[in-house]
Image 1 (cartoon, rainbow, N blue to C red):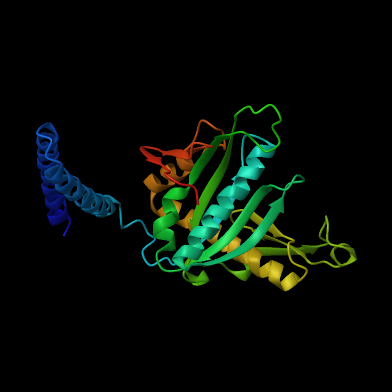
Image 2 (image 1 turned 90 degrees about the vertical axis):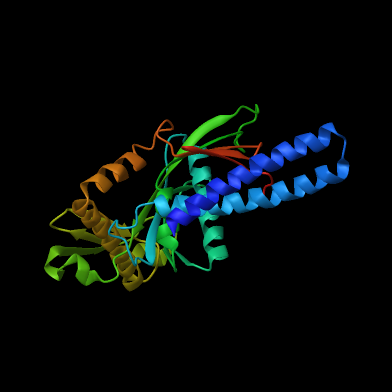
Length: 292
């Protein structure tokens, strides 16, 4: 129970304080055997303290936010301030979440990808499904800032750039959104850009507009019109579902808008600093001990 975990956390911290006093006394008396035992005990207590503190923090997080039972989400990452370096950082963020999904055994599928000319991403949208994926990723929404020397920087100067992350829960069923066929305007057109003659000679690109909200999604990644339409509908339904959640909870809406901001560097929830492998996640501070 939450109350029991809070009590256990207080007891652990008191035990840690007692072990710390014992360690100082052993070191003053030069009793290496006792000091070693105290260090081992302190290490075990700290490990348990971290685990219990995390459980207490989870107990404090809001649970009734309209997303109970949600097992899928759309992850949208966009390059923000910083130009070319922001687009490269967008790739790093995408790969970070992709590796996390692999470790958690979540399904990870790219729905839309807009590549920049120099190899980075302007925008990428991926679908993530799996037990607990939304509950663990929902607080990733916001501006992620990076401070590092770009690969394109010859003088070795540190640059600051940013990318935005949006985590949108998916409705368990389209019926929850009451989306009618008459509310949708579906247009097909010829895709532009690279792809050979097939892309330029067939109407494979799809644009879907939700008329009541005027929300529009366009996809041209795949050569199949049917696949592009399915991807566009997934993104549109997720955005409409997110909008529905906003209407149900005005406080959540304000929080969501403040999380995303404008994409400027100053509006961030986390800062990654290379090469010292440190990042700050407001209001917490974390240190990477090793890069994997």
